[in-house]
Length: 452
Image 1 (cartoon, one colour):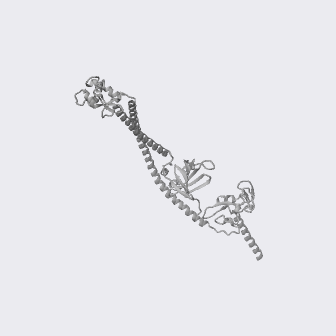
Image 2 (cartoon, rainbow, N blue to C red):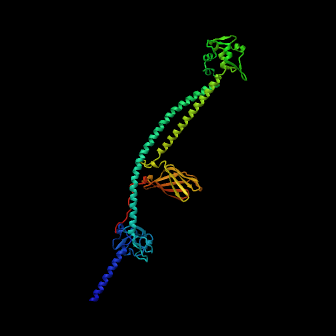
Image 3 (cartoon, rainbow, N blue to C red):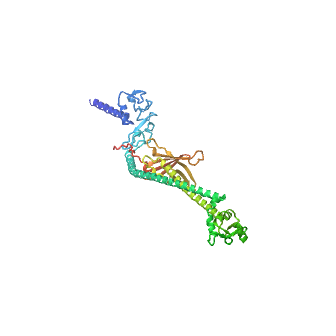
């Protein structure tokens, strides 16, 4: 009787151990979302639906299903996957070929359940570090979003200032346009006067009137000119100035010895005003005086016009530059506007990289040679975040052909600075640019098991 009882007990214990072993064997390497496929039945349907096998063949270290779903806990199937539960850290899949290969791939050591490897469960420590990192990222995000809001407010004010500046410049340009037209008119008039004098227009040269000349020659102010007064006031112009003789003075007076104003205007005045052989002593020739004055006036007007033209051109250049700046996409709230007219540097080995947002990227060697890595092209982020990347194109030619270009990747940070530069392919650069305005309120904590 005792022998029969002992045998029965032994069979019961053996069966229990086998059942427990089978249950453990069948469930290893399966995520909770897939456990419904592995409920113990008389048969097992491969997850891809390709084959039905006896349930005893699940996790028997022999690959029966093409998709490897019958061997989630062994390395039998080349296409199989083993699920690392990793309590306390992030769960993930590894290829089945890594199961029991002597290398610890799962932080909970579940992949090396039947190997010589002595794996420690490090999931909790990894989870702590991961949580600390995520918490730090969240703090950075919160601070960055606060700074971003400040920069948005500054951007709105700056945008309004730029608009006001544009209106002021346009008003100055309108005022200068009026001045420009006035100076052009005055310059044209001065040039016409000069040309008229140079052409011998006696009507213009006669600004020094016959009456004032008569009064100048009439020394005793008796209303008539005498031979003596002409001898006193007039000279002959040859190689040098010569005094008039009495006969020459009488001849200029038409043979008489007295001359009133009407007679002067129809005789001697024409001689003085049209001929160069006689002029008033001590008085610069009227023609030369008017010609020099007209020439000076023309030069003065030309100089004034040039100054106004230069001022007008300068204002128009400023307007053009400002319009180009205002035409750039600075984000929906103008949050990126503050980057304009700013430059940021980063030293990497023997090079200094310089990023001037919305302008250009350059690389300068320690020898002093500066190379353009591209000029501002466009935003090139994803549809969900179009402002996450900048593209700078058409830099200096590359020795292998084509031109240099740079992609600037914007990441969230509490400071605005260059963080790294890479050249993954020849003359194609990638710059990591950190700034608060790149922070987005969509960063979510990655799934980390907190179970103990």
